[in-house]
Picture 1 (cartoon, one colour):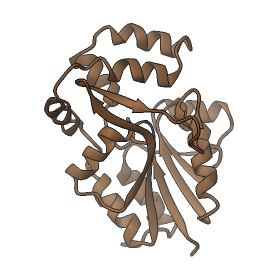
Picture 2 (cartoon, helix red, strand yellow):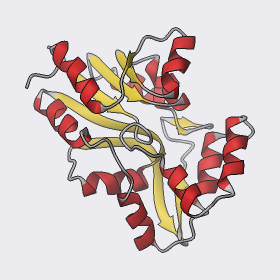
Picture 3 (cartoon, rainbow, N blue to C red):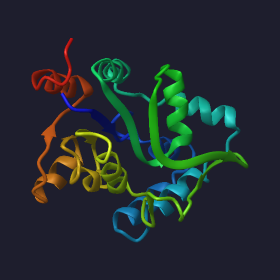
Picture 4 (cartoon, rainbow, N blue to C red):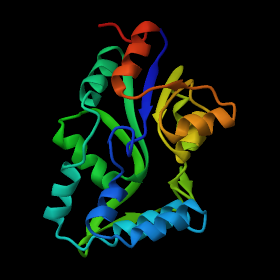
Length: 217
């Protein structure tokens, strides 16, 4: 069995709710109008998220409390452990920010997981992103180019599985060995003739990997 890795999106894939929706619902209802502009391609993804994340206006203690209340797929910690026990490496690939992802990983005591995302930090009662145009995986639209990350990882692994749920995930899906898709990503990949395995939760994904001999229990 060759060296393999599992790469997962975070918002809407590991978490059941996108962090930006939590912010809009709790602190920034005006974000609904920005969301429409974003979906209409008037705003770039990174500009939309930056506007949302800098409209929280809360102490860091409250922001962290909100982050830790994000519901996740309950099976994810076990799934990651099973991937690692079977010789796979686990990565998180997100066009959001590592600021909230790292808090979630710490909450669930998830270790040995590398996060590829936009660097985030707390300042002036908001979450800011440090976008470095010189970074090897820089994207003008997303901050991070997910496809570049997958292509880079392919230099290291024989097999790369990827899981996602939305438009930014269409790009890495084209380069993964196999993509697991749910929600909007399914139709987007179907319309672009990109093969995928549909799923609803990480238990479905693990069952697929067991069936195909990648995970033994």
